[in-house]
Length: 103
Image (cartoon, rainbow, N blue to C red; front, side):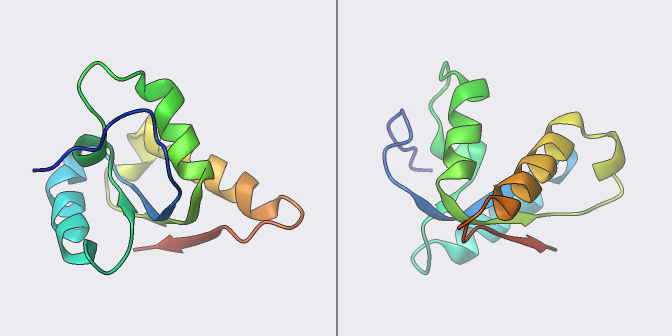
């Protein structure tokens, strides 16, 4: 697994939002998309010790889309719900090209 250096230094095409319970599926989707798009997935792209509370929102704001992995775990996943709310807010910002893709 290759990890990027921090801080997030370039925009991404796709920000993957997932629950902890769906990390395996998120990792598989990340692996499938690599080489076809610039994909951000927290545990694949950030170094341990990175201030995730700062880097995750920056990566999401810099992405063209947020792909949200919806599952039975989503309603109880506080962080994923925050990422969904952030994606909606970003997509509503005047002039924004950010899109949301639920999967």
